[in-house]
Image (tube, rainbow, N blue to C red; front, side, top):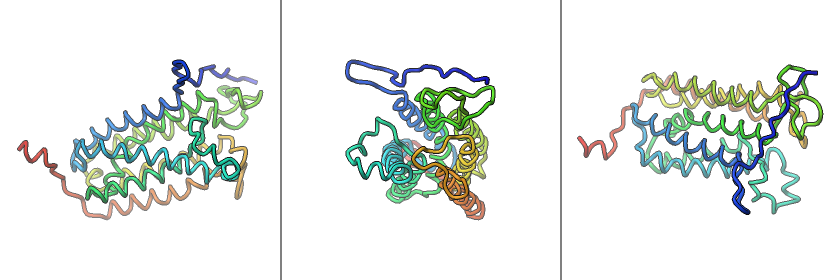
Length: 277
């Protein structure tokens, strides 16, 4: 049976004495920082929904949403019994255990609170976050591959990988499938559409495409990804990832329909721009 040897990359990228920085942490940092820079760029285009200062503040809100929501989502959706028996491990984020769907809900809550506080359309803020989110997803899935976690089901395809913790059989490198679908392809689609003024002036189109696009991508990849051991297959042979992604597809379609039917928003003029004029 053909297979590819797993590249033995140390999960710890940098180690200085007792301090160890893992690739997973660097992936989160890279995703947030590059995403922040891209949102700043996006907001220079009409309708100029946020100033750079707004984006700087949004980064803090979004980071909290990702970390707190991602951790809480993993605990509730994937391993509740374990953490009820071992509550002290809830805070041990460095040991792994983050769920995208939880992080997504955390970011959505952060967006709603941030937009309400600043008097900005929540849908418009969602669009700005959506165009950059695939960057973080791409780096995150690459980090999952390096860690040898969240691997795929056993396979006989030529590119199957024998993961250290996945037994002796080759498996789908499903982390890389997700990096391409949820990260690269979704980023390109959103980048192309975000260049159109009609799309930018109808908040919710980009956000809906991201939410629905992620849901579809995740549902597809879950057919190749090994289900979580503590959960296995659920209703109708579906996985938890698929069940959580179905509502995302529906919400994404709803956002797009709502946005297209809504009136276009006007371009915002920020205080600094007014003074400069």
